[in-house]
Image 1 (cartoon, rainbow, N blue to C red):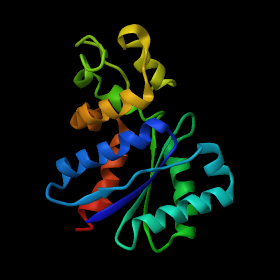
Image 2: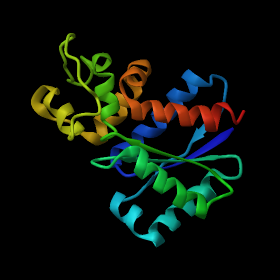
Image 3: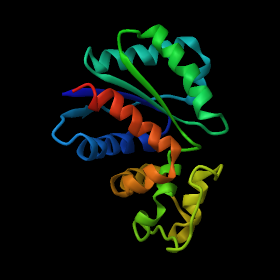
Length: 197
């Protein structure tokens, strides 16, 4: 069994990420037992800008993941370059927990961009609607939550309820094809779960 201790910034991700990780396990490494532990929720700015907070949360994740586990830090990139910021965070993390496997994944621009990347597969779910011919560059909308809201019947997107439901339903292959940051998550899975077997 591979314990996965994750650090996230949104309330929706606390529920949605374990669902997504279990789906990745079933899809990419069937038969492998993973334990997607309840994520540690942080405030992004505080986590990244206060050394004491960064250290505290990372050491907590290291303790939860154990010797054979994996630490996954999943944050929204917002306006930052995911590759550059990810490298900076990874270097800091490796200094604190060199004895643990750590990955940094920055959803470009928000977690919901992965839903946009697979929007066709979500049409009809929870009041989400998009026409079949509509093509969207998933990581372009600055406000991915707002984009989702615009395509919900009644214009209401409830992160705490909709995010876990969509995480359970969106097409992983569509997301992989249409989102570079989702491909990064899959690459990290390959490195830290598939190759760890």
